[in-house]
Length: 236
Ligand SMILES: Nc1ncnc2c1ncn2[C@@H]1O[C@H](COP(=O)(O)OP(=O)(O)OP(=O)(O)O)[C@@H](O)[C@H]1O
Ligand SMILES: [Mg+2]
Image (cartoon, rainbow, N blue to C red; front, side, top):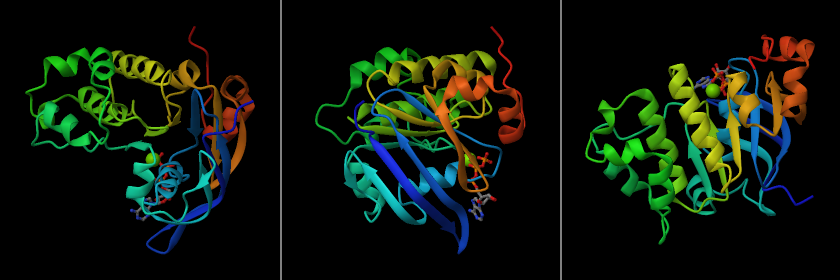
């Protein structure tokens, strides 16, 4: 077993003085996709933002063997943590090409990889990002993180609000992306989790209440009902 790319130990985090992450401990393997699951408002986004130092946090966060929990966000990003936020955050008034150019931090950005993964974005290079569909904006957001040689991606609800056909496209892109970079993925669509995730971490009330192979968790109807409020039916 190789060392995890990220370990999070006793992470707590607060927003405006209110603790929203209580005590979160888990590890992210150096390959594949690890899903973060949990009902609305349990602290999934805040866990990612705490790891990135975007909100005030305590606890130990170790990236590739080095502590990053006292570093400012820009240093964490420089160490190769890519973030694809919940609301995508594309620059609406800039073109697709400009959005991508602004994201490039490395000397050898993975332009070919990104172009192959998102041919639609190549075709829309000159289009203003604000006029793209939600799915296309999601692809811009993912493409920005994939251009750099990141060691880990934190991806927050990439399929939220997308039509089923587009959900499948984004999921396929994530599956390809995971071949070159490990991904910590917050995802509410359990079919997508079933397709993509190797392991899963379940959060409830700001704490990790379950970790294990994603399939095992999804196949446990009582557990998914209790922890996620849904049953993860197999639509095979
Ligand atoms: N900017 C904010 N100001 C105050 N409270 C906030 C803020 N952002 C989040 N919270 C609170 O922090 C808690 C955790 O929110 P967080 O967004 O991390 O949860 P989540 O699991 O990502 O939820 P969702 O499923 O809705 O994306 C929630 O109770 C939420 O109301
Ligand atoms: Mg969230």
